[in-house]
Length: 85
Image 1 (cartoon, helix red, strand yellow):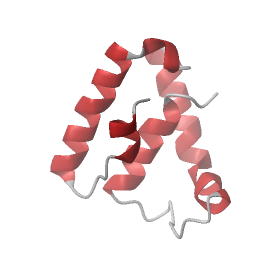
Image 2 (cartoon, rainbow, N blue to C red):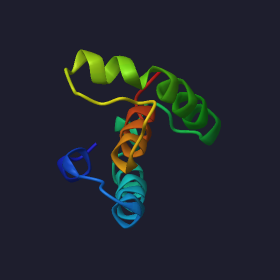
Image 3 (cartoon, rainbow, N blue to C red):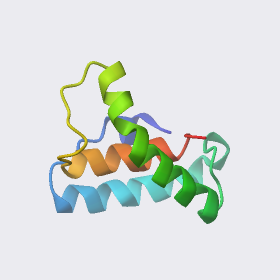
C-alpha cells in the first residue's frame, strides 16, 4: 500500500469516494502487496476486520469507538481488509 493511501484522511462521503478510487489504484499498481486478491477473499477479510477493528484501535492507543463509526473508520476497515487473514 503506497504512502498516499496510508496517509489519506477520510472526513466525509466525498473523501471516502476518493479513498476508494485510491484503493482501487493501489490494487492495480501493487497487487502483490495485497493478501486478499479475489473478491470472495477480500469480502471475507472485510467482514472479519470489521469485527476485529476495535482491537486495532485499542492496540494503537487510538481513542476510537468502532461501534460509533465515521467515514475514516470505514476507510480503516477497507485498508485492513487488504492484508487481514
